[in-house]
Image (cartoon, helix red, strand yellow):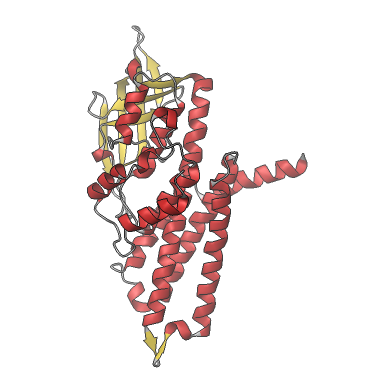
Amino acid sequence: MIELSELRDSAQKAFPADQLIPNREESWNLVAEMGWLMIEVPEEDGGLGLGADAAATILYELGRVLAGAPIIPQMLTLRAICAAQGLENRGEWIERLCGGEYVPLNVLPSAITMTTDADGTRRLSGVLPGVAEADMAGHVLICASDIYTLAPLDAPGITVTERKLWDHSRRLFDVTLDGYAVDPALVLAEGSEARAPIEQRLYSGVLLAIAADSLGGAAACLDMTVEYLKTRKQFDRALAMFQALKHRIADLKTQVVAAEALFWSRAGDAGVSVVDLGAAKALASDVYRMVVEEAIQLHGGIGLTEEHQCHLFMKRAMLNLQLGGNLDFLREQAGRAALARFAA
């Protein structure tokens, strides 16, 4: 059994903390070579059969360096294919994706409609927003009203348009479907009963992944800030010696450690609910925002310049707040669940 500490060490060696936003293509090849894409794939399907906490360990470390390799959408697509029993050549698809062939899905809400021609051909129309690094992909995973299916991005009726982002560590695309004809051989599941386990796996995976990325980024940004305060001097004293700044750093460290404790307790729980994962993601992303905002101030004048590394973390943090559901939505879900438990 691979220990989490071994995964953490290998990730830190492959992606050193002082090399932010490593080259996307080189990172992707390295991720595939290290076998990280198959972490959650069951052993009977040729994977490592490790738990969600193992995947979270890798994503946490990649979040520390703001990696652009789209490991999160790839892991999610693999979750969907592993949970689907209706896909033709399912084993071949798992092998291809574990080997590095990239098949993303959208990480922002979509509204896809399906119509049926007189000859029985099903056609999909609408927009898949937030498809990460779609320029690297050959296929995309589509969730319509009553169907999960893969679709080749060069098929008739599909166009891909980049959505410009403030966060330069990632690239998101909109995939527009205009009467795309569904290929029956690429259908993962049909009907609510078949789709339910896939949806559960996908949504819990999104929440887990974004939370891990957020906490990794928050920890790295805080470490960077502490190092700056140790070296920057004022009145011949390191800024780290000033009591007021010590208290601000201590407050941030407390927030990060508490969020990490909640996250790891839920990442290692196979029976954790989607609502509880949502609450962990909400806390993690909010702590990330808090840390980067304080880091910019603690770096003083240099921190206010857009060229400083603080802003790389800040832009990523602001996007993470929206992915997988924003704070208001996730907190409302957690609140309603808590009230229901108390009322029972």
